[in-house]
Amino acid sequence: MDQVTPAPFSIADFRARVAAQAEAQPGDDFGDHRFNPGHPRLERVKPLRDAAVLIPVIDRAEGAMVLFTKRAEKLRSHSGQVAFPGGTIDPTDESPEATALRETFEEIGLDREHIEIVGRMPDYVSGSGYRIVPVLSIVRPDFSLTLNADEVDAAFEVPLSFLMDPANHARDSRIWNELEWFFYEMPYGGQRIWGVTAGIIRTLYERLYG
Image (cartoon, rainbow, N blue to C red; front, side, top):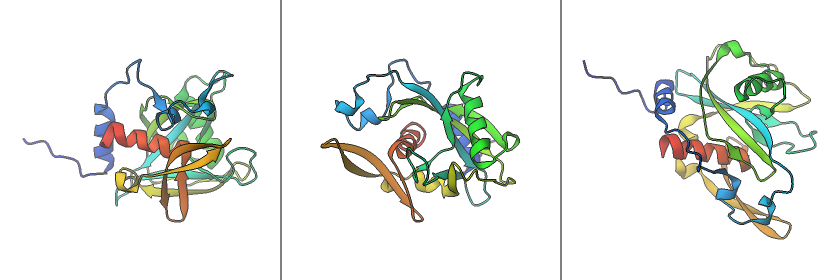
C-alpha cells in the first residue's frame, strides 16, 4: 500500500519533519551571532545563562498553529515583546523540557497533560547572554489558558504556514551603542515577532522546511 503524504503544515507533516531532522553536530552554532558576525555585543564577559522555551504547535483542524505570548509591559526586561513561553533553567529542573513545561504553566496556565514533547532544536545563543534550548511540542486543541498578569499581557496563535514561509521573514536592524544590530522580524495580525523569537523561528524554518 502506498504511504499517504501528510498535508503541508499539518501536525502529521510537522511531526514527520521533526523526526527526520538531522542531529545537530558539535560544531553547529546557532544564534544572533549568525546575523551579526563579529559584533562587539557578542563579546562574552560573563558565562552564558541557560534557558529553555517551549514551541507549542497546536493541532487545529484548519492547520497547525503556533502559540506565542506577549510579555507584560511592566516587566523590566524585554517588556511587551512577543516570545515563546519559557525562562531560566532552575537547578531543580530535571531537564530543559521540564523547564519549558514549568514555565509554560506558570506563564499561561497551559497544563502539561495537553502537551506532547516531540524534540528539540539546537541551542540558540542570544545577544543578551542566554543559551536557549527550544523544545518542540504538539498541543491538543482542547485546552484553556490562564494568563499570569505579572508576566504576560496576551497569548495568540499564528499559522505555522505563515511562519514557515520565507517571504514573511523580513530583515531589520536597530542601533546598539552606535553600532547596527541585525535581526529578523515577522509582523502578523498587529503583533511584531522579532529578535530572538524570530531568530528561533528562522532556524526552525532552515532545519525543517528550508
